[in-house]
Image 1 (tube, rainbow, N blue to C red):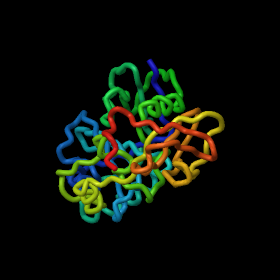
Image 2: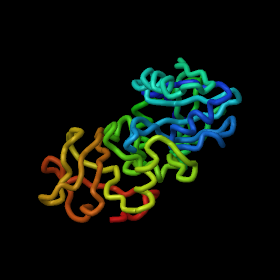
Image 3: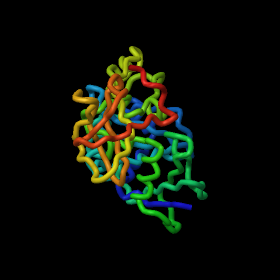
Image 4: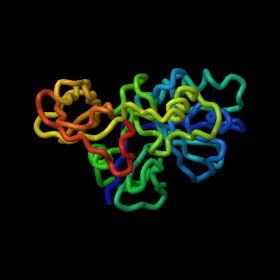
Length: 263
């Protein structure tokens, strides 16, 4: 079965009596109801409601593990330390590795909460890896699953635009979190104008930031692309018709887990 170490991910431990309550006030996901041995997906947003980073929250008997982008780990440790004020929590970086498996579920792995069929995750796996991280990203790309660190421009993308509402990444009933007002308003109004969607292309990969055109009208922007597959922030009201990037036709795909376009 394919098992890959995800070197783009790193781990933070959050322990102490106030650990769950502390994180629950910050993250888009409900942390206080997270049981030991369970895994949830969520995000930390800017006060304006845009994605700062995505994360997985692992319930442990003595606290929580956070699976976060590796290049953001140290900065997040510092940010959480500023947020904690008088909360009785300990926040520390960990050297434990993050692993993904798909097709089968190895012992000790937990199902990825974003999408059924996406695979399973583990922290600190000591067995043999049989695939690369590139293989893992190719697998998730075939399912159209956005990985914020690769596919969503930081501090510019709203979590609903990155499909977090469809991937169990936002608990709209949990109460306050950083950026909640904007996120809840977008959900309540139900007028989602843009979503990051997968597309296929032939030839050289288009650059991130390249315009997607519908005829002569701007229809979106490429956020990532490699090996014939990419992600683009698309205007849902300009999906019909011939789409192109750099003069080449592309095909934007609506995965079956994404509802019919609202626009």
